Structure formats: C-alpha cells, structure tokens
Length: 103
Image 1 (spheres, rainbow, N blue to C red):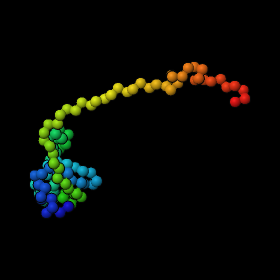
Image 2 (image 1 turned 90 degrees about the vertical axis):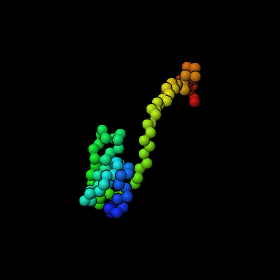
Image 3 (image 1 turned 30 degrees about the vertical axis):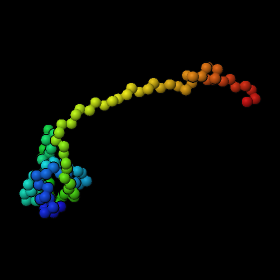
C-alpha cells in the first residue's frame, strides 16, 4: 500500500490485512517504508511489535476500541433435560405386541 495512504493512520489503532491475515495494533511512525504495529495493551503479554513492509499491506482499517473494563460474564448454563424413552408411557403389552398368525 502507498505511504501517503498509510500516514493518515499513524498513532491510531488499526487492523491491517497482510497475506490474508488481519493484524491489529497501534501504528507507529513509518520509517524507510517499514510499518510497525504495537499490540494493544491487553495483548502485549502474548505478542510483541509487528514490523512489515508498507507494500505488503493489502488493506487497512481503523479500529474503535472501548477502553472501559468489560464486566465478567457468567454463562447461564441450563442443566440438560433428562432423556426419556417414548416406551415409558406404554404398558409392556403394547411395547412388544404379540403377532397373531395371519397378520
């Protein structure tokens, strides 16, 4: 991608498409055609800075991040209903009927 397009995203949270994979981070100033993305604060434990050539970027988009703490979500898991056989409501004589000759 051309540098004149990328320079508008410097110091913003962005996602860039490189080789079919979206990489997200805060874009640092571009030097010698090299783009550096710093990972977001919550991902710095797992990832370091990503550097790539500007011409390798296929697409770019700005990301709006909500910096407010997310509330803990407790999943409401319902206990599975007991499985009942359809034969339980029938008396044994109907479960396995005796075939009469001629039927």
